[in-house]
Length: 540
Image 1 (tube, one colour):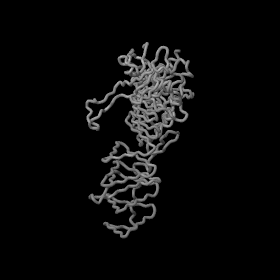
Image 2: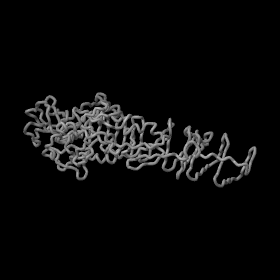
Image 3: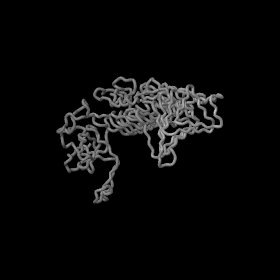
Image 4: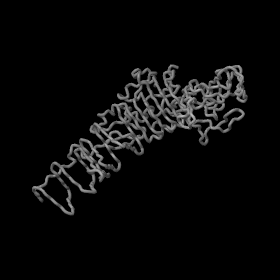
């Protein structure tokens, strides 16, 4: 510490520092991140003494702008400067920063770093979850920092009960509160020594809701009474190299998320697959992009849990939306499946083909099961193009309709087959036409007996498609011709929960078996609370 300092307005030089200083104000009218700070001394700190207050500018680790030497006299993009660089939000009032003064000049002060308050880094950078919470919850939930006033004498700050954050409700709404892969996380600076977590978290907006925490803020002679002093929590960008106290026993494509606890002397884990190795970008409200190495998946979800996409280790793409999924292309839209192409609808299936577009369906068999629904196929004719619009079905066509089926055609209806035509009716057959013309080599009326048309029910495929029980986020199931139907989280058929149950041979609907629900799906929890420090507690 310097023995003497000068006020901001003084030109007399002193020691350049560095100094530790407490932020008194971060309201900079120049928008340059300048702070007003009080230099800290061993004794005699008094923020009422103006001589201890200094203006210090923000010193970015990287910033720049194109040279002013190239600014022209035209007021356009090419003739002005362009800025870029690294920008951080100024810390809150009361935070401690390190400052220096160039050549000891008090007018050239810069803040060059932040000194963290002791033990106040549990939330940094990923808003980690812990079972040490003041609500007494057994499960892990996102928590804030511990209260230094009420919990001042506890030896290990990591295990001090902490208040849950508002993000707990976000994860609960998403269905991810008990999912320690897609939801809660262990990404905290206090997880291990040395830390394997790299990232940044923003402070979040100031909490200005009714009843939010308020206090006095500012310089001693100009303190603002009733200033909002709490935060709503911020966005996070985390690059986590993983928690090596827990190691996955198999790869994500070979087995469920089962982790060996190294501190409990379990030695059968894979040393190259630590728990929670990931990159995660997540906003305060819960929108996230997750690249998860340990579970070998990519997960993208919105804040309400009403839409998510997952790319899995074996190459599946699962998509869930509570509203519509819409695609458009100005060129071709191609679907190709080497195995089945299954479609099931809850109401109408509408298909319109126009301007010589063509629809090709399969090369095997098409079975249409109609209960109370309709299959609507529309074709249009463009007079400026020779030939009519066509719908080509390259398939053996078996149509099973559970109820009466009507076919209405706006123009003529031609039926042309290379083999015999057979028409069989279990009731009356009625033909009404303006004129009826019948021609043939022989025309037999009422004998000999006509051959019976083959029923679609005798075709290779069953009379009606078999269905399977698909679990959703509750205890209920959805009966469908599909074997996997994504649902709102928590979804029990995520591939990584038990990848052997979701291999191609298991998801083949022709195999005819429901896919079981993994026992772990209700919690999705893969490890115990890493912050409990079980081994250390036992040794003590």
